[in-house]
Length: 307
Image (cartoon, rainbow, N blue to C red; front, side, top):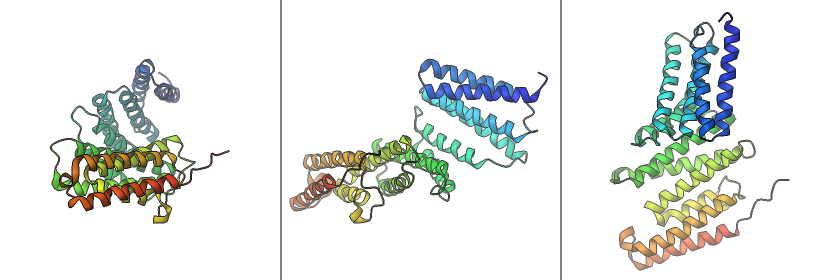
């Protein structure tokens, strides 16, 4: 009660405790994480927020991390409310003339894009717009800054997830589907080039994001344009076609082969008329292209394990 410095240190203890508990995971830890963040914010709100920009910055971050803990408990509505409170505190500081922390801003927006897709009534269009706004901010530095690269990958993941949901949730707006697919597959290719650029530095999270983004690309072509799937996969994986990916992506190879097998089954089952293909000859050409792509992918070398 007598020292703002001691109270400031206490907020750090509670906030860090919440962060560790969130990383530990599990229902009990996550509930306790939320309580820890609430304790931290109780003390932060007793500090003179505008005397030191660190005070408001930590309050923004603590609300944001509270949202992460709630999201991990599958409470997207509560998580979004915490995120909106984080945004309110940030914008209040800007109105008072404080410089905006753009790293916090784009992190908040990225988390928001993901949460919008987890609501009971997902907001796919808003998630796409939010993800694109993040990319407008992160593209300039994502090839030189690891944090910007991580944000860029997560934003592309949210964008593609939103597109996949739009394409798989009836009624589908067929007048816009082709544009969504084009934009999403562009994001997939950008994302995998970016993940390759940072391979070895981004950790397992980068590989997971790359794998999931690649899977989104496969799903979209499989659902709407299976006759173009082979071309998409080889453009992404084959260095002979100018792919910037490392060839040694065993996880992507496995996903590609699975997608090719599914595409062949879909084409055989649905038939040329349903797919918009012209005649049996065209159908056979597509099946041949899928088999040829599978054969090429099987011949691609595997990456030697790191020592």
